[in-house]
Image (cartoon, rainbow, N blue to C red; front, side):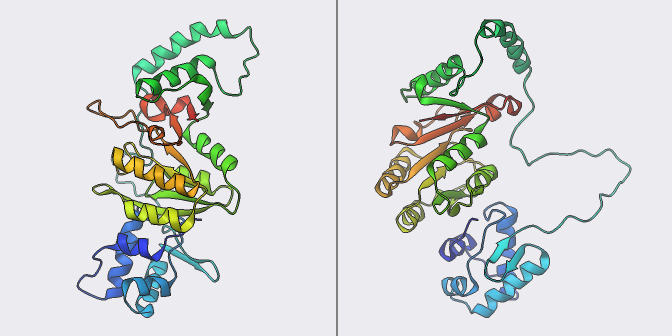
Length: 317
């Protein structure tokens, strides 16, 4: 379960006071942070006393704000387990106004396949007989695909051999494999907040503790918060998306990438850089992969650049 420190929540709250009861303003601000994804669902909020001390308000005020969130369905509190962010139940039946409904699915940042995908699939099927004489089993993936992925990394300024590539069933599978391989059940993982929700699921699947570090669409990564989190928690693993971050779109500058890798190296942390979005640049310009600044493990997927239905991802070690 992700635990949100009081200091980090206070920074996210910003200038939360408005006209009216302070507890209502605090509750409303936390609700908005939940709705826009900056506080991920399933996050445990800081204890009332800790948040009150950080905000220099009374514990009674924070308790009233939490109670307001609970009554509205945005918080679940259990004795001994704290208060966890959730969403109100959706019990209302949809109303039929007689018109045709237009549904925009914002839950997946992906588009249907372009016509070229079908054409490429047809060409690939014609090459299938050449592979049927073998048993089809390769623990690391099809050698030709691994070569193509290695060539793309080399073209981006990161020399890569096919032996450094392992093909997976998408990015989430890659993250899950790495988490289960590199972390013990009592280990901590540093994650961005907000971030790709399925990465949270993959990291939490075996009971790992997640420590969030804020990412803002305008200011990017909280450098000081990042370095403090490394020093304070000494995480076994850190998960970041430095290129066109999901969901803010932020791109981590080269200097910040170097600083991130230096902090991770000092604490013995393995950094996973999710490059699923890395090739979505509009103007063709992009930063060097994070592994150019230190021993980061890179993951990627064709889910955004080609089509999610391919279920092709990879790990670059």
